[in-house]
Amino acid sequence: MDALNPERGFRVTLMLADSAQVAEGKLYLLGGGWTEIGPRPWPFAVAGIIEVPWNLANQPHQFRLELIDLDGESVLVPTPDGEQPLFIEGGFEVGRPPGTRAGTALPFLLAFNAGPVPLPPGSYFEWRLLIDGESSEDWRLAFRTRPDDGLAEAA
Image (cartoon, rainbow, N blue to C red; front, side, top):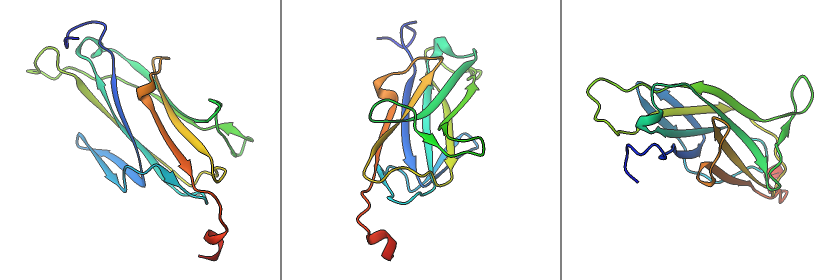
């Protein structure tokens, strides 16, 4: 499929990290690339690059990054207002910088840091990204929590 084809969609790369930051057009990661955490709650970050195709630049887009369990159900976490689904949502718009060759994919960088989230030990989860209400199998980031073998309490 050629770069100017209007059927070309977003390309997404997601990664889990200990922490992440976007600064000066760069994505900074600390302890990135893990797929296993816990069993106790631990702070973490979700970082990524959304490659916006040329034909979808210069227009607003909405995203939602939600944590789901193996059954595809939203993961509920305690909040001051009771248990709520864990998600992050917002908007972005990527412009075409002057002099950029037509057809170039344009990056939108994202980094979300979270405090410790209580997740059941020995379970599997995934972050699912939706852009403008649509998702793709490639826009999912799976991870698991370690089983609680009782050794963590002794440490």
